[in-house]
Image (tube, rainbow, N blue to C red; front, side, top):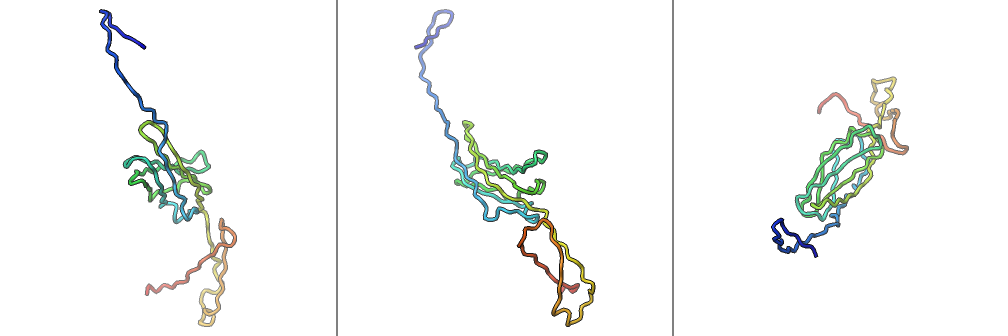
Length: 171
């Protein structure tokens, strides 16, 4: 028991106060995308999604980071809506090629935070070079049996290379 009085000796009234302890963070998941390998064409339009039991309207922060401490992380923000959240159109082209970690975080009003992460692979360095043929004027017979060669850089062994032939005729 504790009692308090003022300088005139008046006792303060007892008051019942209660506190609620909230030590349980909201749950969050970050769905692993079907294609975890991001090419140069995909690096400026990354989309991720997940779920959370945080109340609707709660912000979710997604941070994309690489292994280079000199590269700034890329941050995107989503909002929980009916238990789901998503970010899209995220440009991670300033990150270094290799492993990119995406970390989604959500907090409740008491400051409890949960995170979920997934690893992606950024590979924007692939390059294909075509060795020009010595004879560029092909007869009809040569067009039926034409060979072309070239080189690849930063392309994994066994990956297909597609060559598209076209002419100057827009039709």
